[in-house]
Amino acid sequence: MDTVHTELQALYQDFYADDPFVQITATPPQTKHTLGNNFCLIYPTVDVRTGRLIVISCLDNLVKGAAGQAVQNMNLMYGFNERTALEALALYP
Image (cartoon, rainbow, N blue to C red; front, side, top):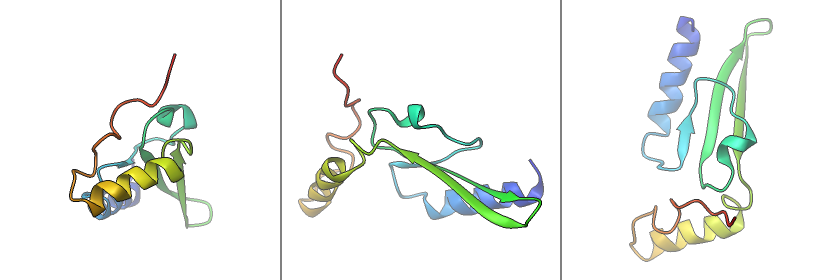
């Protein structure tokens, strides 16, 4: 990874350091990486041909969507730990 990518990764990691459900990845994420969890995976990179920033993100919209967001907001509103009830896999066999 060249200097630009390393600096970009560090910038995003610093920005999201206090967000427990955001992870900055070193490789492009896939939706299967977020299946049944509340994480948003982010991969920032620069297109060397155009010099443009490209940001790829993945999430499970059934968990990170409205229901997961409602639980996370309720936790914050009532002073609970932001992660309460959101760290277990939301999958039923």
